[in-house]
Length: 264
Ligand code: E4P
Image 1 (tube, rainbow, N blue to C red):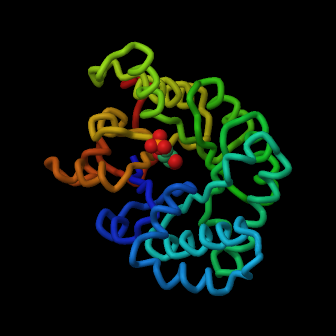
Image 2 (cartoon, rainbow, N blue to C red):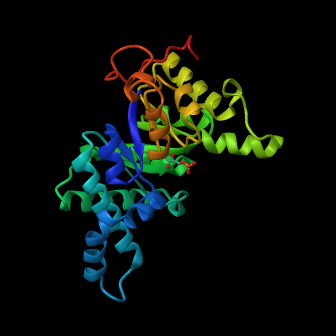
């Protein structure tokens, strides 16, 4: 699997050297409070008109932090469109184009960015439209095979099927503390999606997301990409072996698809 860091924290990225990284509005706000971004945040706040639109400041902050991330990861940086727009296709398309324009002003091409959209019907339609402009999307909040297939059939570049939020749900619903990893419903959901995609030859990249434990990450080793928080990357690195070896059961971590249907 390609290792992706689920963070906007530059120091953590320097430490774990993932190929890609993913952000969302809460990760951006968390990153913005780190000392390394203090001067950037000050500069943006000083430049913002006092009666200006706070959303405009947030967009600039998102893109400026994303731009810093493009300087340290060689691959894709995911930048999310606010989930409040998730049921309005035109608003999502407009916001995505605006974010790409802001990136281009910073000298970052759209080939480095994945626009993250929620996997609603409207989100899938927005991704389809954006692809015509050469803007690739990461469809997030995927909880079911049906959502995943809708993305693949629309030609979406990448999906982020969630693990932890599904497991959290079942833990509450069944009143249990934990699941054995072989019965973890979040892990099973991503395995099912991955196996289905490979069996049908779908090109859409599958990136497991929303992990709660290193065991969940390891259980999905071989999935195209895995986006993992710095805390869990540290837990994984503390185990024996390099991250690449752990997350790539066979040799050659450059390859994106290694899990076979049989393994799932
Ligand atoms: C990644 O792309 C997601 O934003 C992230 O993994 C979500 O994880 P959460 O369930 O911890 O919010």
